[in-house]
Structure formats: C-alpha cells, structure tokens
Amino acid sequence: MCLCLLNRCGNMDFDVHGRLDFADPEVIRAEQTRLLNEHVAYCRARSPFYRRVLRDRPDRPVTIETLAELPLTGKADLAEFNDSFVALPPEEIADISFTSGTTGHPCRIFYSANDLRRLGYNDAKGFIAAGIRPGDRVLLTCTIDRCFIAGLAYYSGVIQMGATAIRNGLNTLESHAEIMRLTRPGAIVGVPSFLAKLGEYLAETGYDTSSVHTLVCIGEPLRTRDLRLTPLGQKLDRHFPGAAHSTYASSEIVTSFTECSACAGGHPPADLAVVEIVDPDGHPLPPGKVGEVVVTPLRVTGMPLIRFRTGDVSFLIPEERCSCGRNTRRLGPILGRKAQMLKIRGTTLFPNSFFAVLDSLEDVSDYYMEVSGSALSDEVRVFASVRNQDCTAQYISEQLYKRIRIHVPVEIIPIEQARAKISRQSRKPVRFFDLRTP
Image (cartoon, rainbow, N blue to C red; front, side):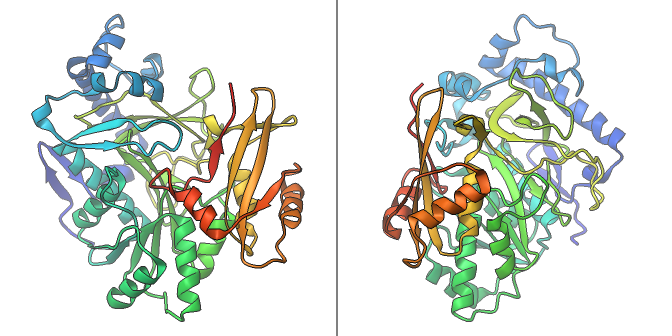
C-alpha cells in the first residue's frame, strides 16, 4: 500500500486511503458534523438558491440529527432553478457536465477545479476499498467525453490512487478483448450487463481472465435486497469469480458509494457525504427501512446541495461496523426508482423485478420494457431478443409469471432493434420506457 496518505488538492487535504472511515464512530460523527456546518454555511453565503430557501430559518449549528430540519432539494428544483445553485463566479467553474437524463430532461451540473479533484479522490477511495491496488492496470469501458462526468471521475480516481488507466471507452467486445490481450488489466470499470457480455465473449474465444481480480460495476444493481447476487451478478461471477463490486453514484451528488471486499453495501466516504433514507413525506427512516436515498455532498464548491433527493430507493445497512473495518454507514442495493414504481392489478413492484427474471434466462440476449396506462393501473409490455427460436414469447411470459405472478405480454424482436432502443437515449443502458399518462 502506498505510504503517501495525504493528497493535497487545492486548499483541501484528501486522504485517499480513508483513515477517517476506519476511526471510531464518535470520531466520524464529530468530523462529519464539522464538515456539515462548514457546508451549510457555504451554501448560505454563496448559493443564491440556498440563500433564498434558508433565509427565514435560524442560522444555528447543525447536527447529523437536526439536518432533517432543513428542507429537501428535489430534481425539479435543480431543473427549474439550475443557475441559482451555482456558488462561484464563471471564471471559477472548470467543467459543465449533464445528468444522464434517464428519468427526465438532463440538467447542467457545474464543477470547480477542486470539485474535479474531489471526484478523483472519491473514486480513488472507492477503488481501493474494492481491492484495486497501486500499480494495477484498470480498463475503463465507459466514455470520458459527451459531457459525462463519471468517466472523468473514474479516470481521475485511477490516477490519484497510483494505478494505470486504459481508456478504451465505449467500444466493441472485439476491441476490449484485444486491448486486454495487450495489457492484461487487473481491474475493469463498466456497466455490468456489458461486462457480462464481455466475459461471455472472452470465454468463447479462449481468453484467460485470471488477471482480472476486480470489477467495479456502474449503473445497474448487482445485488438483491438480502445482498445476494442478482442473475446478472451471477453471470459476472461465472466469468470473473469473486471480482464484481457494485457502486452507486449520480452526477448531482458528486459522490459514489462503492462496495468493499465484504460486498455488503456501498461505503459513502465519511468526509464527503451525509446519507439519509426518507419516507414519502421526507421524514428520516432508521437503518434497515426502505425509502428514498437523500444525500448531502460535503466539500463541494461549484454547485453545493443540501439534502438532495436522488429519486432512488434503498436502505441503510443496520450493522454499523463492516467486516472490512470501516465504520461508515453502508448503502444497500438500489431497489428501484420512485418514478418507475409500477402498480399492476393490485401489485406494486419495480422494473428490477422483471429485469432479474429476464437476466436469468440464458437464451434472452437483450430486452427492454414499456409501461403505459393511467394513474390507477399500469400496463407492461416486454420486448426481448433471443438466441434461438425455442425461447418463445410464451415461454418468457410463463417464466415472468412464475416469478412475479403477473401475466405480461412479450414480443420477440431482432437484437439490432433491442440494442438500438436501449442505447440511443442515454450514455447508460435504458431498459425502462415510461409511456404513462398522469
């Protein structure tokens, strides 16, 4: 392990090996409280949006417990008052990125130079937690352009922790296989559904994947509510045994939550974020209870946020201490998005329930679903491409009914049609298309 623990970034000290994360819970709480108060004071002083929102609220110290007294910030706020969130003059904004737009219109996100260093620091900590080591070669299979901040964050994180980046980006299976033969990476960062296809292709071509000890999987959940691997996670595990680690992030929160060696929830860096789970009315829920993920990202200077509602549904792991030794709260798997919750003939569920079944069917090569209907009841239709004609629409529909007890119409489509639909609207795979009317 690298002995240089402190990385000086602008006017902030960033500890890439996360000594604070291993400190006693009381020490973590005290430091988070100090950083939280600095953050709220900065928002009051620099952010036009929060100057207005907090104007009539007492300017007094905030604790982790009293944070819930401050108002929540929603994605609608960010869209309507986008420029009012910017807390620096134009000459101090180093980068403008956009949200992926998978659940609505993309928003501009403004980053200072220090925010970009913070991003790299955040991902360096996550990579180290997942088992990537200084000196490892890390294949990046995600884009670094197209106003996509995550690709830049992953690249910066690899560099900050002393590993080597291989920036092959969004490319073909054949291209990645050739790059892997030339470089023998120890780790890969990418979308798990693509990495599963890459693992299958490598197996078919006889490539030895034993050099790959870590996969950092982005954009799609790998684990179920009880932390077991999903069918997609199981596919990855067949090709890259024990390598898959899930991570959760968004452009707005400028922070990611990466699984450590225990693979039992994503660790938020103690000095970068305060995480809450709230009920539909915005009230905090205790660990173990499922609700919406709310994040207050600390030490952000370009577009700071307070109690940002991500729209994603998850829970905090009840056990405070992780077997890896970290004492930070852990975020469970993302179970779905509030906006994508389905109500079908009296049953409430998320699209992930359908995805888990479809991922478990070996002859289904790709798929997406459309939902239509009114506020009272949703109608779902699944579109799937298959590897052989024995995997019929009726068979897929029967398998869905066996698992989720709902009859769903299925249409078999060409693989080219499925992939064009899944990849055309976003930098991440989009398998859920919402056609519902209010």
